[in-house]
Amino acid sequence: MYLKRLEIKGFKSFADKVDLEFDKGITAIVGPNGSGKSNIYDSIKWVLGEQSAKTLRGSKMDDIIFAGTESRKGLGCAEVSLTIDNSKKMFPYDYSEITVTRRLYKSGESEYLINNTQCRLKDITELFMDTGIGTDGYSLIGQGKIEEILSSKSEDRRMLFEEAAGIVKYKTRKLEAEKKLETTKQNLIRILDIINNLD
Ligand code: ATP
Image: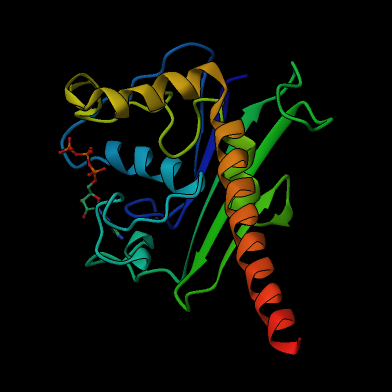
């Protein structure tokens, strides 16, 4: 499983469609200051479902849409597609490639797609859980990330190992089940109260 392709259109400084092909192994993005290196990193985080405008270095989410330059008008939509190799069927899909797409319109409407089929953000988050690819995954190392990992609290660092070990999915499901159990308990208490009042 590896990141094969990234297609960016209308995202931050990339007004025109840009296709980036990646090889297996480690990819480093280099270039002059302000050329868009961090914007590429942001675009990957964004397509994987990042919800914080601040994390994407903006103040509101539509700051990620190409805002225009002196010579060019801004755009009404940003779109990023990330294609991952699935020839070893690591993902539960019969396809040899998985493409996730996210679109955001100036109007505030947004869309998520997996292989061109509309889906929920939750589907994308779950798809990448325990793969190291998610928004907080260790496959994306931005500026300052290594320092952050080394200086973080041991409980925070533990998250990284849990993701690599593949247990985050189960921990998340356990939390969801516990929440449901608690809601059911509360409902039961309410029902018993009602029954007691009827007596
Ligand atoms: P550095 O090496 O200094 O960190 P970088 O290569 O990482 O730079 P980025 O931060 O990716 O550069 O790109 C910055 C450029 O992106 C700036 O010129 C900024 O104006 C442009 N930019 C950011 N958001 C938008 C937007 N919504 N519309 C148009 N341009 C944008």
